[in-house]
Amino acid sequence: MQIKFHHVNLCTRDVPGLDAFYRDVLDMKTEPGLAGNRDREQGYAGNVSFLTDGRADATQFHLAEQDLKIGFKTGQAVNPLERGHLAFRTDDIATFKKRLEEKGIPYSDFGAWAMKGWEQIFFYDPAGNIIEVHQVRE
Image 1 (cartoon, rainbow, N blue to C red):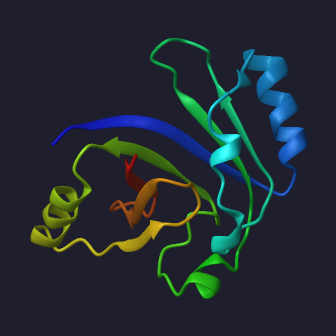
Image 2 (tube, rainbow, N blue to C red; image 1 turned 180 degrees about the vertical axis):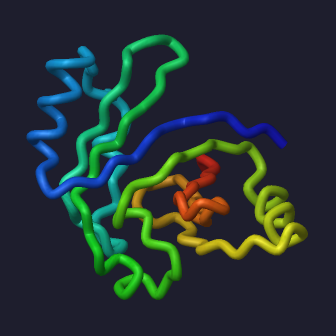
C-alpha cells in the first residue's frame, strides 16, 4: 500500500477572495483536471476552487465554501468542510481502513461522495485535525 500527500483543503465563506489571494501572492494556477469531477448531487454543492503550484509533482489546494451542515446531511461524524483538512492518496483504501480499525481509530466513510471516482474516508488526528485518505477508482 502506498500513501502520498495530495492536497490541503481550506474552508472559507469567500472562495473567490481566497482564490485571488493564493493566485496573487503565491502564483497558484488552476488545477486543470478537477473542476469537472465534482459531484454536486451527493450533498455538497458549495463553491470550490482547485489550485496547484504547477509543478510536475504538484501540490494541490482545494479552496471550499464552508458548510457546517455536511455532517447532518450525510449522517457522518466527521465534517471535512467545517475547518478543512489534509488529504493523502492511496492505492489501497481497503488496507488503509483495516489499519485504522486495528489501531482503534474511528473514521467516516464517505465512499464516492464529492469527487467522481474518488473513494474518501475522513478521520481525526490526536490534535483534532481532519485527515482525508482517498483512492481514485478509474
